[in-house]
Length: 368
Ligand SMILES: Nc1nc2c(ncn2[C@@H]2O[C@H](COP(=O)(O)OP(=O)(O)OP(=O)(O)O)[C@@H](O)[C@H]2O)c(=O)[nH]1
Ligand SMILES: [Mg+2]
Image (tube, rainbow, N blue to C red; front, side, top):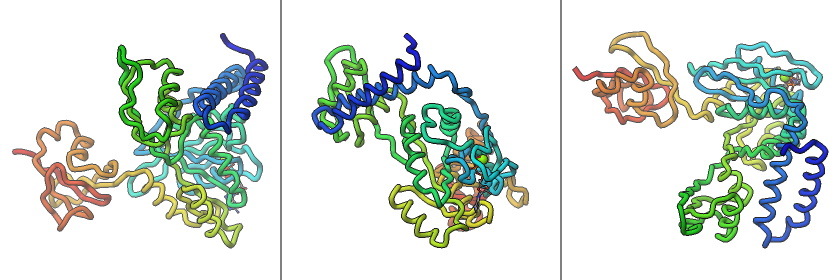
């Protein structure tokens, strides 16, 4: 049954009241988790009931080797930044809500084509769809890395941003705890491994509450009850992010502010000025590094000058490079000749499992 807006708003208020009453009682851990889940669901229904949100299920076409999203409050300098790092002209202005659509651009760094999305500014309650917030967050989810753009004079906005993302079950810079659930026909719930930090009883109750009654379960990492629910219901999202702390030209002691923010929030912070061009190369380098990519260069034949760049994931080996180049070459591949950072000496002969490094030059050698 679809409930109307007023009913849902009332329901959320009631649940919040119940939540605040039960919150501090340790024995009701599971109950609290369930209330929070119900609140989250009611909020989602509210968004749908409001029908104000366009672009839900919004799709941004991904191109290039990787994608980043510039996310922040209005006037933080997102558009000024995309204009500096990418080949785009996105409108900038002193007033808020200058950007109303997602503007794509391309940043080229070490031959990698990194797609950049300039987003409309987020505001409080963005997760409820305010100011098109859900569209922005939903598009950000498709990125490989989020770059939070924060005005150094407004650093309190960082926590607000995290709150908006957390409300949509997006976890930032957290490792996803490994949870294994093998459903069975009978036998009840058997917990084989429990490194969650939660009592076994709580795990069982949550699983029962979500309709799993027979299963062999292993939880390999620490989780809260909310996170456990979020993961097993398939809604949890894990994303990497860094902070571009902008407008440092307006504050003398910017490094101290950057260090404090980084330490407090446990996130990498790069102090920059988008309009004055300070630390822009450093930011590009940190984006590239945090994307976990490497740039290697294929040389078709020994002695040839022409090099073809190829972008791979960190940890890739010769065979991965061959696969990306052409699927058929893998079967014929004998070895490779490499020069560069991963080679012991120029033109070293290496096998298929040789791990590559950024800047390597590779020539494939086929079986005759
Ligand atoms: N002093 C200073 N001003 C900046 C810097 N970066 C951006 N600005 C100014 O801040 C204002 C807002 O910049 P925008 O780039 O439009 O901000 P935005 O985050 O795209 O804003 P919305 O599109 O409204 O979300 C403009 O007047 C910019 O000139 C900077 O590094 N230093
Ligand atoms: Mg803008």
